[in-house]
Length: 102
Image 1: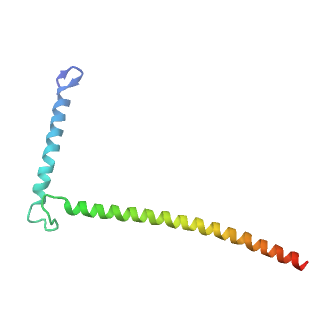
Image 2: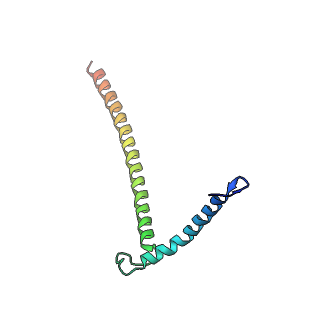
């Protein structure tokens, strides 16, 4: 049951305090969980250095893949323009050959 304080109930204030307490305690609890001896996959107990390094490496690879995709699109566009120009040039050559024959 909440007690009205202005337009906000006392429950809302105490709920906010609980959330703040949990947010402060969560990193401490996570460090304690990660530092257990049973967690052999964690090379640095209480730290996320390995995860951060892996995330940065994945980000670098993602950026490289995006750049490669953009470059292949540009190359495809340029090749299509070159094909069109070659077709036009060949058509002009065939037109001139037809004029010379006739």
